[in-house]
Length: 108
Length: 119
Image (cartoon, rainbow over the protein chains, first blue to last red):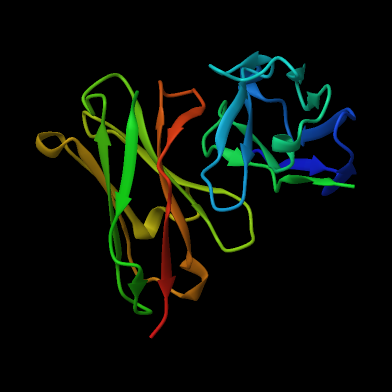
């Protein structure tokens, strides 16, 4: 199975700063079938990015995804207060579909 | 707008079977979608359990395959999860979710339901 490793584990930033989250796969992700989800406490995950770089419906353009092969990045250009949450990457190119362990973006 | 709602017992005894149902509204379970289950142990990350297509085709995580059964009830527009021989390690929030196709992300999620395995 494809193992996804996210870094860093925790990112401490202030509102207005730029956040860069990394997701590395143990093998190439087919057709860039890589998604990013945001999860806030007590809530279900919400799809942000699919196909490595396409924003899901209703997602603000401060969220962007990039990468291919084994290295992917989620960038939040300017953090808003509501962006402090845990972010997960997921690959859906090779079953079993797998998730990274998550990156927590916390207020500094 | 598709909505999903999980239901089922919040407490299951060790060695028993966990049974959950996901009711789908705002769309037909017979559409060209896959219907999935994902779980999250308290304070931990997400684990994909398995999925089903309305025709009955299933796809399970090999790590759970021997204990998992996912089924669909078209008449009730819902799908279900059964996980047998549960232990404390199966304590988690269980989410149902929809995928637009086979190799697609999870675009709609239920709110999740906590299932605790304890005697």
